[in-house]
Length: 185
Image 1 (cartoon, helix red, strand yellow):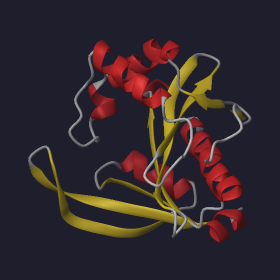
Image 2 (cartoon, helix red, strand yellow; image 1 turned 90 degrees about the vertical axis):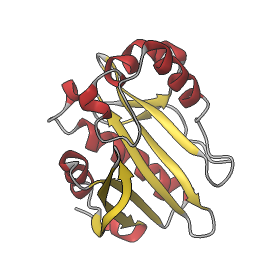
Image 3 (cartoon, one colour; image 1 turned 90 degrees about the horizontal axis):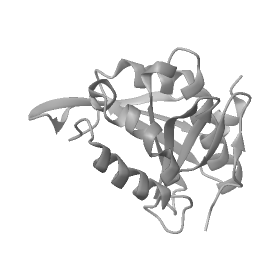
Image 4 (cartoon, helix red, strand yellow; image 1 turned 120 degrees about the vertical axis):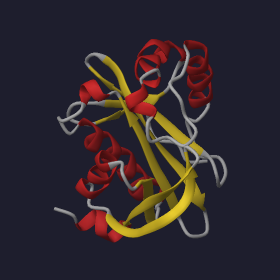
């Protein structure tokens, strides 16, 4: 089993397991159309749907087997401002996929970059991952910029590779290797 030593602290944030007490903060962004806009099949959530989401995320505090998702709440002085996750995609290839969701009111200050970097650090330094990748809708410019700021390179632009809202959509794939992550400025 792989589990971070909680909490993970960054200069401005605390990353910790999600708890049911986070429901109000999580609902505040999961209920917003601008937050779920780029999520496949997602619509703004009702409070009850957010409750189910929080309960599911609360059980994602460690990697026990390939395919598991580790989700952490990102907390600043105001409460939970988002979540970051790492999905264990391949034990053999030591690969994980990163994902994140943040309340837009906290954008533009580098908080998402700081939080995602902290969890990716854990994956490379503590778990021994070889590669971390992330995917986003090709029109999700904010997500693509975040991955680029992290030092991830764009490896692919898959043209009309999946159905999104009933239409074929392009997907961007970004990735970084452990050696690249450790050598970034």
